Image 1 (cartoon, one colour):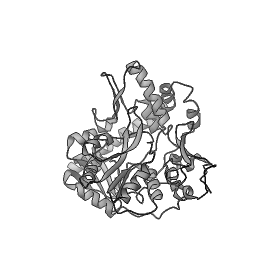
Image 2 (cartoon, one colour; image 1 turned 45 degrees about the vertical axis):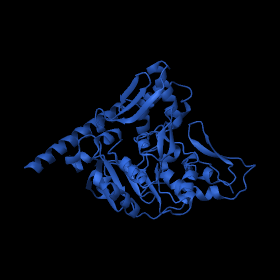
Image 3 (tube, helix red, strand yellow; image 1 turned 135 degrees about the horizontal axis):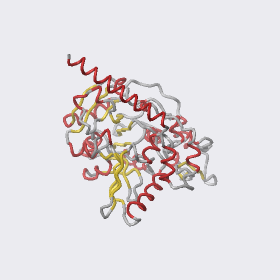
Image 4 (cartoon, rainbow, N blue to C red; image 1 turned 90 degrees about the vertical axis):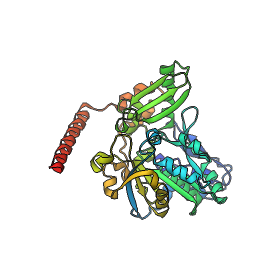
Length: 396
């Protein structure tokens, strides 16, 4: 029996089935929305059933364990911290793994600005792995490469979305004491096709189609961590920079229009049973630990097991950190336990991505209603008043 996708919300695109197939008759192909799904050459299929066995979405629901510890922390190296999305924790863990002759498998940009997973073995290459990539990365034969490294007794660190980590675990089929996995609290993965169209649009409008992409930062902190910007630098000095609240691509992501169907009913939340460590932005740090909130980025690190504890202890001398209980740590980050809501007009949005200007389309569908904007502003003012009086009471 071979794997069959009848409902696209039942496939996260992790590639476990394609990597596992002994006949190599499964190919990950892009659909009209730009997401990869397995397509089987039935003439080559021997119906071994391995593709079904390794599918993470077909696994029984696991009993959830409580995480060991949770911390608010940031890298003492301010340069690395500022180049990172939040507190710069990944870079320290990666350095620690490489110092033990380990291998890193993580997400980077290619020359066209698309996200894909690569193997890194040198400290100087860690920089290209830093920062968020707001699209679903291409894994290719990544799982096979990881297995080869593990079978050769190498230490390996794999970072990715919770479903990518779970796909790796089901592909491997057994535990390795030299494999470390780190995921993040995931909002959902946007379509690479939409990002590609947006990059093409920006190249035309910003550089008159003359510039190549030099660098991409989805979380530029020039104006602060809480007011991050999408910053794209092109060869020749041209630049596109826009606050996340005004950039239509980031807004289509944050308003859930551009996400993969499986993200609306994610089967990997919470991820505390999947990876050794889970990281995220520590939103709400200004209320929980205002003494370390300097608007340069603070990471939430959730230690899920003893191997995660080992990773954290390996970097502890290079970070500032505060311990916090898990429930308090995720109080301002509901994506730790909940899936996002699917917009009513998501299908309509995707039906138009090949027909309309992508910039205008994202802007139109991501536009907030006046009532929603007013309510958010009112709630923001109320919260500021509450914090003011709370601080007044604390100082009295």
